[in-house]
Structure formats: structure tokens, C-alpha cells
Length: 337
Image 1 (cartoon, rainbow, N blue to C red):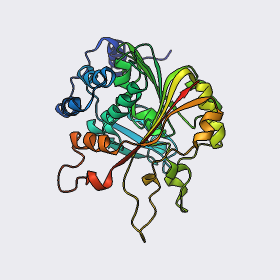
Image 2 (tube, rainbow, N blue to C red):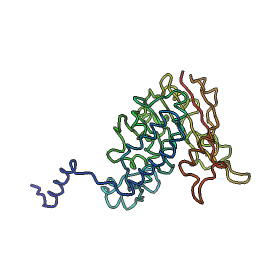
Image 3 (spheres, helix red, strand yellow):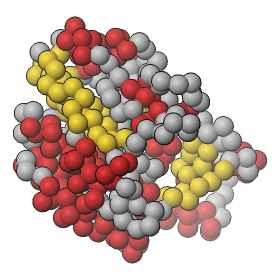
Image 4 (cartoon, rainbow, N blue to C red):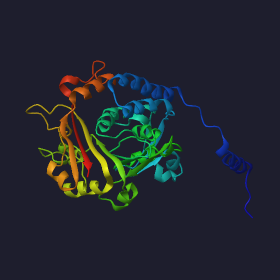
């Protein structure tokens, strides 16, 4: 008969007590990261008019602090593990992995900046009839982070973030990162939508708002010059098939919005910047042929975007962005008939 050491019995006792153990107190850095979001919300508040955008900013008051995380990856960056799962691997396997420590700020901003940059997109959605998010389904294509999903869920939305980055699944793998949040919920669907049938099923249909910010850019899908394919967005389906799938994904009367912030194009003689072309990648006729009314098409939202950038401090410091010359915005909005 196998016997247990005192050490293993102690470990077992700790495991049994773990569900009722008191959660660790947030670190000062974690509290500072949430405080920064709330301060930025205060700075943005004078710029918004709609109850929806105001509620989005106010929802920062209910955010629980995120936390620093350690993630692990293989050398090809194709597989990722959270710290708990990586340390459970055999030493011979873990020795081949690369670890990365990510601070509390990365939890909210990842590589893409503040989730509050979604404020302007929601202000525009409200202008086109989306009064609130209570009981609504929202998809964020190319979400890149979880903060904006949590804020939407706090307003009652079932918010689904779609992204191809496998790191996000392990970054946000702790209890409370996804699942029920406030009156709504947060879900991550990691894979190539809609080319991957499993991800397509996971995302489902019946959305009130399908939003893409800084992902569906003309330069990413149809670059004017040959570039490294890793700089581009690969849909895995034709443009027409993608728009047709959007028509089945949003409900009748639902909105699809493409909101793109872009830098200035490269000057002559300099390397082409695909992400500087923020125009809608799909022609107007393709939308109408698939049952959408075109409410806005490549409208210039630069002035409002630059005001938002200033409120968020993007132009602060010696290395800050020159907003007047290096920040542009295009918005396209479509309603399914």
C-alpha cells in the first residue's frame, strides 16, 4: 500500500483549503494601473456626448485590478503556456521554452495601448442608434486585449473578443479574467475567424455590434507594395466571403463598424507602411450586395481622434506623437437590413 509523507499530506491540506483561501491583495502597481484607467476616463469624459460612451468610461470605476503575469512560449512562438502550466511540464521540456514577465500595465494595454481608445468608436455607434449595451451581443474582431471587453460586459454586454494571437489565451487564463463580469460576460475566441470552422461556431451569431478597430485596414489586406506577410492580416477567405459571413453574424438591424487609427504614410523613398492605410478594405458595393445599408464609408474622424489622443496623453513627452501630422482616423458603419 502506498503511503503519504507528512509533506504530501500538508500539500493536500493546502489544496483542500485553497478554494476558501483569501485572495492575494493587489500590488501597488496593479492599483496604479487601474487608477490610470480611471484618470484617463476622467480626461476623456468632456469629449463624449452619448450616454453609451459616458457609461463606458464610468465602468472603469468597477474594474478590479489586473495583475502581473509570466507567460511561456516555444521558440516558434506558436504555442504558449501560463506560468502554472509551464511549471508542471517536465524540466526537459520547460528548458526549451522562453519565459516573459508581463507587468500589470500589460494586462490592460498589451501591445496596443489603452482600451479606452474604444470610447470614440462607441460614441459613433451611439450616433447610429446603439443606445446601450444591456443584453446586447458585441464582437470585437482583433481585440488584442481584454480591458474593453470587461468595460462592455460591465454595461451588460456579452462581449466576445476574436483574435489570432495564442498568447492572449494564456495571458487571460486566471479566474475572473473571462466569464461573468458585472451584468454581462467576457469570452475570448482565439483563431482565424471565419476560416476556422471551430472558431466560427464558438463565436456564433446574433450580434448587435460587430466592431473592428485597427485590424480591418485596407493596407493590411490590400497593401499597395509588397511587404513581409507577417505585417498583414490574413482572413483565410475571400473578401466577399468575409462580408457575407458578417451578414449572417449580425442580427437584422445590427451594426458592423470598422474604426481605424493610422499614422501618416511613409514619405517618398521610405519603406511602405501598410497600417498607415486605414481605409475600409471592402468596397461599398460589396456591403450593399450582402444586405447592408451603408451609414458611413471612410468618413474622416481625425479631429475627434486627435482630441482623444491628446486626452490619453499620446502626445506627451519628448517622444510623444505629433497628433496633427501623424494621427488619422477612418470610420465605416454598416447596418444589416
